[in-house]
Image 1 (cartoon, rainbow, N blue to C red):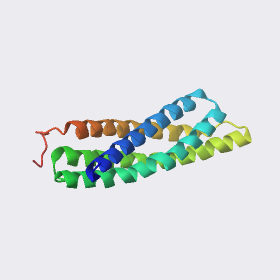
Image 2 (cartoon, rainbow, N blue to C red):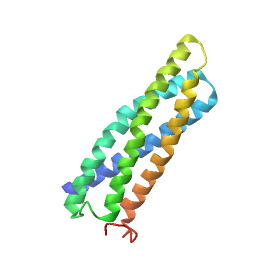
Image 3 (cartoon, rainbow, N blue to C red):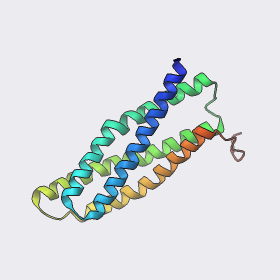
Length: 162
């Protein structure tokens, strides 16, 4: 197996882990938050934070490293429209994800404290939950678009820099 194929495999695998972990975490957090069960919210939010550290963070680092290497090896200039748009969408996703990580950490701490104290979650938890969801939707849509761009490599006639 050559270097290009190894990098491509790592790039694909890390993208699946990144988006899959994000979607799975969002699914469980979304429904745990709607359950009204503080113990469920405490457990799920703690595990979502852990999943971000264990899976999402390494893949967020690996994605651009392998992507830049693959583009270079394949002779794709970074200004290639589908590639430039993919990078922009990846940055947009990261701009949504960073505050989501902070929100998740805060939500996990609030849920753990409420569970320990045997009290309901504070009102700020619901505000953080709404922000968390509002940031998650565009991030997920952007990553779906990146998958489309990476697979199809469209010409993008509308691209203003072509």
